[in-house]
Length: 389
Image 1 (cartoon, rainbow, N blue to C red):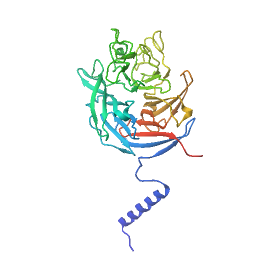
Image 2 (image 1 turned 120 degrees about the vertical axis):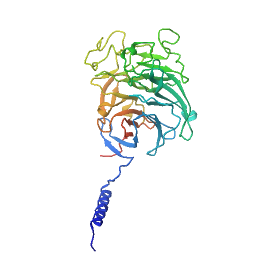
Image 3 (image 1 turned 180 degrees about the vertical axis):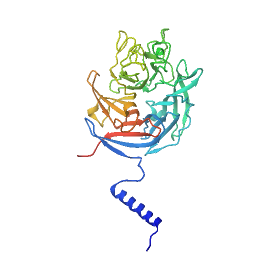
Image 4 (image 1 turned 60 degrees about the vertical axis):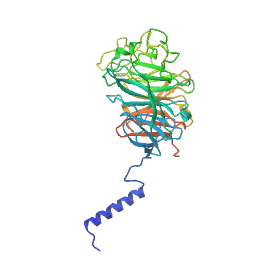
């Protein structure tokens, strides 16, 4: 039998495919790719739960095991069994200038019954745009948001496109803590009559929380909890003791972890480690009276995107550790603490392996969930490796 060129090409393709199958390769990448990665206290496996997400910003685990994911461009999706849903309808109009967009998600404590969730986004208004908080119900079939209502919009909007914040931490009583950056105008972080550069605290209906330091006074805005923050993009409450923790971007150095306290000032732009982008030193240096020092800082910066307190069953040796997602250097920082909460050591995981890490969440089973801040973003699951040496 005589074979022509096309027959030979077909035979070669078939032989190559057979060889790849025998060796365990596939011509098409799988959505469930896994990698084994060592770390100081446990061997880890990193599984890709979903890819093809567009600049994902936040992830929450739903009671049925699905994952609710926000995309910066204004889209909300659900990931189940490696499949990414069509956009969830009912999301309000989002201003997507610069760093703005659809940002953080948080489920109400009674979400399983109420289907209520909260989200932050950049909203348009007189003068430009600013950070807003809304609440809505996720429909039973997960295809739409119902009764979406804006419950907060920051004072003084601007056309600037940076430093919107804005993670949400839901307190045990159902009230909401969230952060807003200085919107690129550092002086606003020192003005108690401006929501910019602050951690804020509101009730589920948007009213100021009862224990806020300026509520009932003329000294500052009633929603403000603390001031002097540059751009707090991470916020978490330790489920063990209720401690509120923030992580925020510095300039050239000076990324900080703080424990925001009511009425306290955390220094920006007068006090910070590192330097201004111009190279100039900060007016009051790295510490000064009446300004709270950070619990921990990075110089040079790692560009932190989120923070979580590890309290989970999968890694008991990590109990109480702080887990910080970082955009620069594309890593996750694991910080060990002593009984007083002071940071003792730092381990840097996954540097450069998966791209810019935007969010980190401790799942109910104790695994870590990560989102990569990429145009082709991924949802990753970090678990304990079961591989035996």
